[in-house]
Image (cartoon, rainbow, N blue to C red; front, side):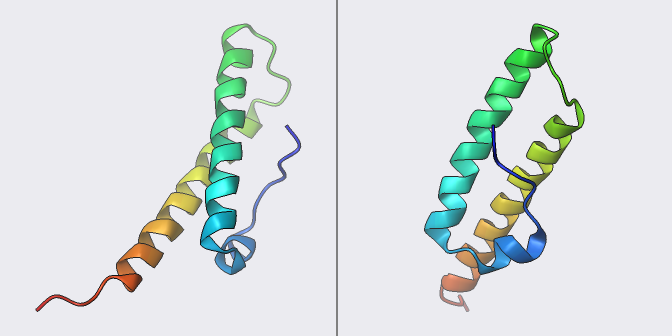
Length: 74
């Protein structure tokens, strides 16, 4: 996969649609990396960790944006 490591600043300026697209791409890559790992064909084991953490960053950012968009209850 050609997805490069996303930096925190890059994610903050991305739109919600861009984040969703990137999340889907990373999940697809994570799936492929799991298969490569299971068949002992994994070239860069560190990529698994990078992908997992980037997915977590995107999900955190999406959650923060959703919380900020909902009206205050009180």
